[in-house]
Image (cartoon, rainbow, N blue to C red; front, side, top):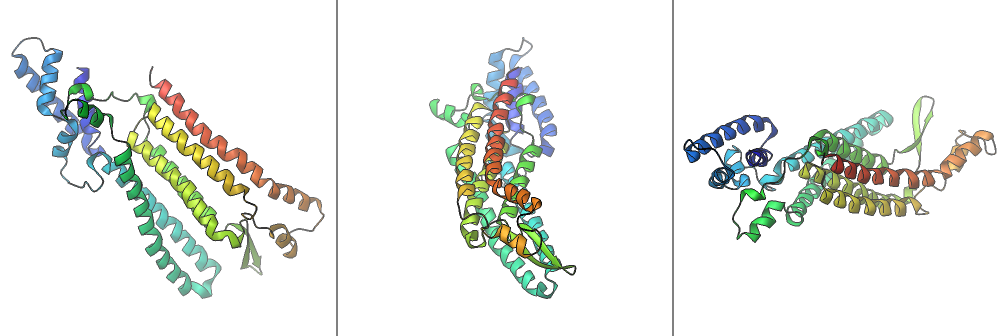
Length: 336
């Protein structure tokens, strides 16, 4: 009855998670009744199972019949992952922007109206951009990465067959939604931090906020933002792909490897640009009385400051390479 299990899995995985168990039981009962009728008291054979599954038809089309809502803006197969990624991204955007607005209110009380206007403008600008980026990403996935069933159906004259059913993923190779959601949130936080003008050393005078000594070169802000959106935005797409696949496969590992290698190259170019870091950082620390030039603390901070590029050059590639290795390990484990 392995084919029956694979068929039910193929149908239910295209349905909302809260309805999968109930519809799975209902579908199994229907298949059992059809098999008994087909066998007419004889022993049920693989041929009987294939005939019943052929009568039921393509699991994707059957899944459409089970869905009450016809929300197929992206496509029935990708709609649920699309909604999850969209929700997580938009919630992250609002939380991050809201946090930034609150920080500005605390730091610049007299400019609260100006901060609110900028907050509204940011929402009007960033939210449509985020939605458009996600829609474009899933549209490309729909076009460039069709599932294996579509390819096999073409070979058979566009007629579905039970042999097209994918294997049920092994528990060790499955990708949990929590992993993907955590990954997307981390990328969103990195985008927010690296693109914020408040990333640096905060200066206070008489208990009141005075200014920020930024880590990044203020004159390089526009180029910096483009690099950050491209590098970490591609990372969000990679996490979305994990949600689409639902399990680690060699194909997903290859896609992850390509995306991560491109990200590593982009990051190395980004952090190695001579104008990316604030050239006045150490000088500003001295001028604001935070350090005394020539002191032991000054030398230590200077070494750390000039070692940031080396640290990032080592840390980010290791993290991205481990992502690939972890995928390979989980693919291998899922075979046992």
